[in-house]
Length: 479
Ligand code: B12
Ligand code: SF4
Image 1 (tube, rainbow, N blue to C red):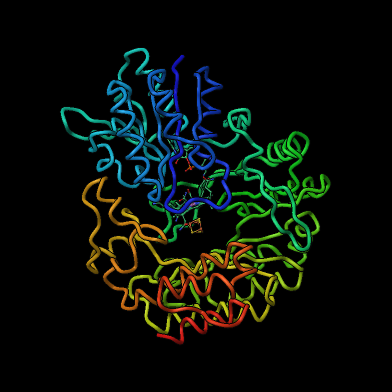
Image 2 (image 1 turned 90 degrees about the vertical axis):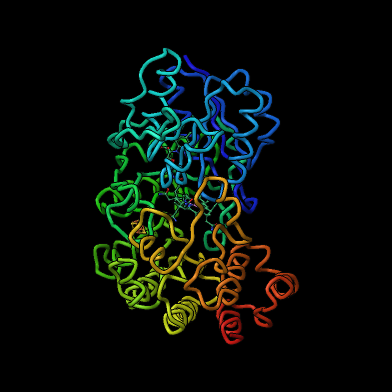
């Protein structure tokens, strides 16, 4: 039995609402079930540095869960671990090391990293280290040998039904429950997964890079978990964080019926073409709304066909609009996300996105939809689009530590560092503004507080007016 400490570092901007640390929770639950002793440290809700200091000596392995936004803090915590006890192995997993495993493991404070799904690999590594066994057969493991990075072939992805449900005793669940507005009521909400991966292959997406195929959890297991969350923690709304929940209509219709019976609301993301091409009929969506679907997320990406083709989305701008019209018809609240600043994006493409947002606002009316983004495209190594970005002159960090130099106020790689972006200030203004629009209390006092702040920070601001539509026009008109 190994003693394993798993840490979620701080992101770039402190979360306004802590999110359930699903990565370390799922890993911890798997390890605990296999008989290991696990401690989770979440920087969103705990003082990670002092807790880590306290527990390094008693850990056989310290693992960090790292998105690119976490890299600066993850390096700080890894250095700290090594300073306290250089014999304690440091392991990185998550999106960033999965994209750049060799570069990550070349760092002095990282001994191992795991590419992709972590459950099987971390368990095998912990056992091998404890028993002094070989590690060269552990699928997805990257390690150092004589100063060189060695990469084992990837392991097979787990089928979801072989995964045990999260062990909620590993976290203080109350800290992660938040109130989500669904129409006129605020409901106690928690995040959960109904599956992993996605079979589409959009050119910017992490699922394409790591070939993360879609794997659903059976309807019965979802229902059982939802019921437990309601009974044990009083949860009234489930925020499904998976990326392709709607892929199998039969499964969705089945579990939603049970959620409806339990009076549970739920939120999930969907491809627009599932609605616009009639995989889900309007009557199906109406039924889902009746059975608790309160908010539907759409990765709309762009209002320009040229850009949708570039990212291999396989959809049309009019399908974005059709999906919103269906939402209007059935009384569903859409949350639409957009990417701007793609390689080769022209002013016309950008304005096509802005006018699409305006159209959505016209259809739904202020307060009946939200926007996620528009966010500026950040190229991740390994994707088709990344290769194009490098051809277009993108310079990316050559070492793990250099990633800490490419963070800015809205994420990593500022639009100012992206060579094809001709008006970085415009894109930053749009991104910065929409980021703050998402925070409910800020949107309430936007005219008093947010707009002057935007003005100070970016020397441009979406002045008067309290709907996104007017404000978007105003930002754009200034350039
Ligand atoms: C839900 C989600 C969020 C949620 C909540 C995240 C959470 N609960 O932790 C919220 C909304 C908060 C969020 C925020 C952001 N997100 Co986000 N998010 C996701 C999403 C859709 C699913 C993540 C998830 O919950 N997965 C389920 C768990 C079980 O899987 P996992 O995290 O991948 O973990 C597994 C493996 O990675 C591995 N693993 C993970 N950690 C570790 C650690 C060790 C030691 C080991 C061995 C293995 C291991 O094993 C795990 C279990 O198999 C992903 C897309 C995706 N496919 O990953 C994007 C994604 C991770 N997000 C992304 C981004 C960019 C962001 C933001 C920066 C967006 C922004 N501009 O604000 C912020 C950053 C937040 C911050 N802290 O700074 C990018 C990350 C790209 C990158 N290079 O880092 C992704 C990949 C989406 C994309 N663009 O393709 N996100
Ligand atoms: S549909 Fe969504 S999750 Fe699937 S590959 Fe495209 S962007 Fe990624």
